[in-house]
Amino acid sequence: MSHVVIVTAATVVVIIVLLLLLVVVAAAVVVVVVVVVVVVVVVVVVVVLVSTVSSKSSNVVVVVVIVVVAVVVIVVVVVAAAAVVVVVVVVVVIVVVVVVNEEEEEEEEEEEEEEGRTKERTKERT
Image (cartoon, helix red, strand yellow):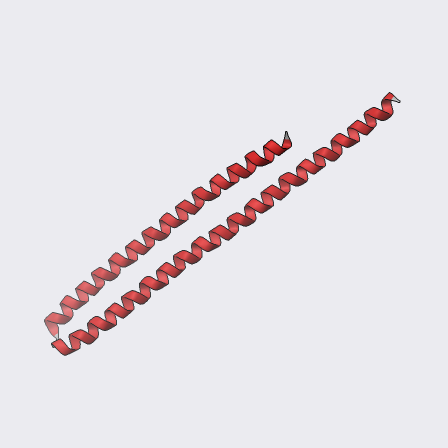
């Protein structure tokens, strides 16, 4: 009976963890997409402004600098999103292990109590 409770509790925890992980991954994807869009818009605006103001040789340098900055920002955001996902996975694994251990301890306590009751009944009968 208690084994079924442990399996059910573990299943519920795993489902909750998967849903949380899905939410975190979706949030990370949204953040990455927003950052990419912002970087592209900024690059286009700066390139247009620079092309209307300065000479062509400096345009190339400005465009290269902007592209490098955009790539660095995107890499930082992707790494941060991956770090968040890793942290969530580690926390979820720890929670699952703790819940399963607690359930096992409760099962052992129930078994010990049942053994104690059985011994008491045996003594009462004799």
